Image (cartoon, one colour):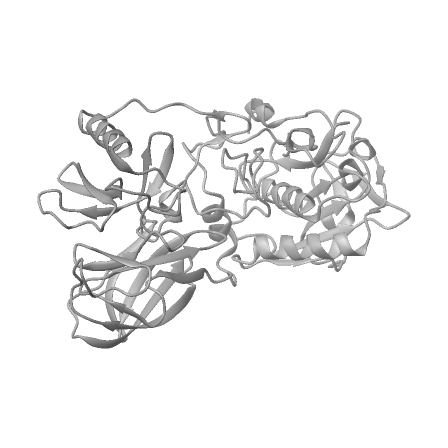
Length: 460
């Protein structure tokens, strides 16, 4: 290995307040020449998270890491890492988070010392960065680094750098990232992954995505690939574990609803790693499948009467989860009859109208806010819309207009009155704006606008 890996050494300003992402401590990776494993198999499946006691954790300097003898290749001399002071509640929450982060893989996370014989990866939690090295005074964690597994590696999270009462999910982020550096993973430019420097929702989980490497901007990956997939890397190294199943619900139609032929089933499916696909079953028979969010599948030809509808979601390890409802299939609706309560008829289908959250004409910010999965911008606002036929009158309900949009049209408020208790504009002015918007779209593609991604966060 060459010292081109010096690029991996990153040190930043320590946290004055860890409540702000931009001020959180960042972690450090230190290149270790010749540290990689020569074995075709992983050296251990145990990650020991070591809680430094009141007397501290003794770490000895050595040419290679050996967790069994507390020897670290990156220590500056024999050192004592200060005690972990954040208390049992933070520790328990942090350990639960780290365990969940590694749950998809065949690896054990424990805070019970494996002893001086069995190989294991060790992660020390406690003290300050200067307890280990004099040149990383502002780091939140540190790890030796090579582009492959470092057997018996010792990595570190400096809990005192995060304040007296650190957020356990921030500590979890650092622990997860530092341990994974010893498995050959570098930084990713993806805010949802533990290998990131970018802020965002916690906890972060290893993502099954091919993404660019980088800290606060993208850069070339250092380990020979154009992109990095942290999930694939770890599951290849350890094998599959016991991943958490997806969370799945049928967003539309609602349970017990009367539906029309070829009704759409809209499914919400999320997973801490990634959704592979969503399948639709009607009366126990596979009726459709999609791998693209938002997950919307049309029902096939069915007889009128009652039916069971089941949505099954699978994550990337084929872990399933499902949701089921019952519906009653009726004839196509008309503008005059066939829909219940606040539903309105569009193209023979009853869909939620202005009186329902996410219904036609409701305000929205993205497609997922709408039960129709269509959110259309209009003069500074966004409205839930639905596909219609502009060549046929009456395909949209009262107070809505079918505005041409490519080969079809879109139902939007503007027929002759207000559509949702005054929250949405209506009438000729809105209709003119809609037409102008659609005409702009039909003239050709517009230039994409660049934007900033994420907020700066201190990490490893």
